[in-house]
Length: 381
Image (tube, rainbow, N blue to C red):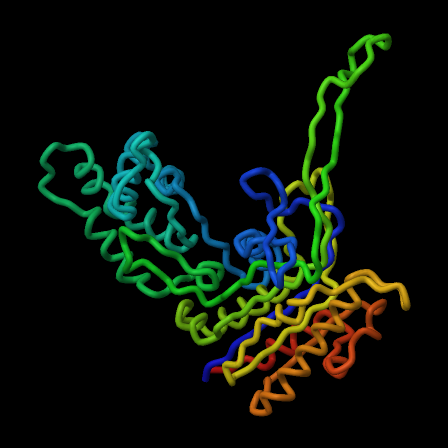
């Protein structure tokens, strides 16, 4: 049985610069003929996998994307009692075979980022430790009689082909051009977050003073500008349950992964410029959907015409965004009368409860109830 889990989130951020472009300005996009604030999918993916509740609920360490594969293996070999110099040579040789090549300027780093689970790193260190004498001769002798590193790499690739023990790798996938057999198709799709309304860029002019400067010396000692905006974003995320189970080969871990994902997606916030803006703003509406019919809908077109704040009654952008999402969902489900979600759970702040209409019956009062409504709808086998 296949199932899809969707998340539709509305989140209003105070002035912030959570995700910068190459000029240092907040990312944006044109949608519906109007400029919108944008936060990339990569920024939210990184925030989700780093959120502590994700690893807490899955009970599995997150994977590590790194060029320092050799350094990690070296540290683990040293903990097993191997000498530092020999461990680095063996680890670097293993990393080179696995990655295809090393960085031209820094031979202890791979040429590309490698995404590996904690279990995979542990396996590498264990196997190299068990085959230490042969592996060390292979990297130190000019013409070693025995070779083991190539065989160990091939063995690891066979064992991990189209599977991983790391929930975040199972969700977001991995790709290594030099070793396509290590690739894993992502089970999760994440859209770029877009503001439900049009935005304008704003600039903050700031100064800094030299604290030890004499009082009779006027003027700032540093001046600068930083860009920011403030927006209510629509976020869409989707998990393919069958692909998730296929990637993990463990249905219980897949269920824990969905719970960890639901909880972390609700609280994860990109870290860009947070020290300057502290835009730690909670979700304003969260709708989670579990469905088997495959009709997975990104509801961003509810905001193709930008929402507007009103005066009678007075609103900001949150309430009209909720109303637009509610109405668009009703339009789709009314026409596609063969669409029958297995479960729908809605959270909305009490302040904006009256903005719900068609979705009001799905509202959950407690966080745990909202999560469990979806988790309990997942297939048991």
